[in-house]
Length: 151
Image (tube, rainbow, N blue to C red; front, top):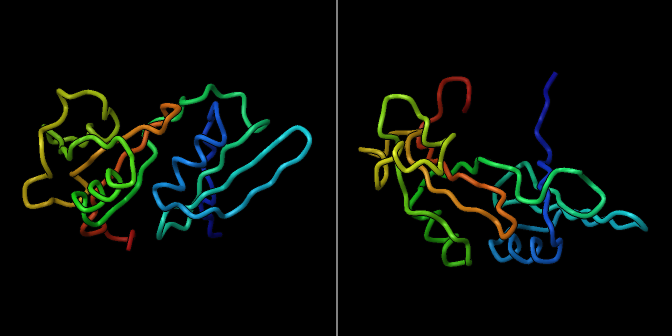
């Protein structure tokens, strides 16, 4: 049975501020629902089959508590430049310092990363990161060639 990721729930403090931030990045509004005790906004990044959702009355998680949501790109430097142009506070591009790809999981730890893209733009090894206005953490990962079975 196929299972496809549809949406990731982000806890935010200010729904309007979050909506404005993500729409400024070029993310498309996929759904909007509101009732007496809830409000749901669903936005989809360009080219993605999955979306994010946030709102009121959706989760008890603390605003900004989501970390390391992965956005896959095929050109890390172009993706970073575009996000910066649209107002996202994106880090400089970096790659892992060791054999294990730990910088993707611990993007706040500068000791695990070296500046610039991975040598030769090695697939799965170049990153940039940013937080939304609430502190929810995003990681860009450059994938130039997919592992077998992931095409």
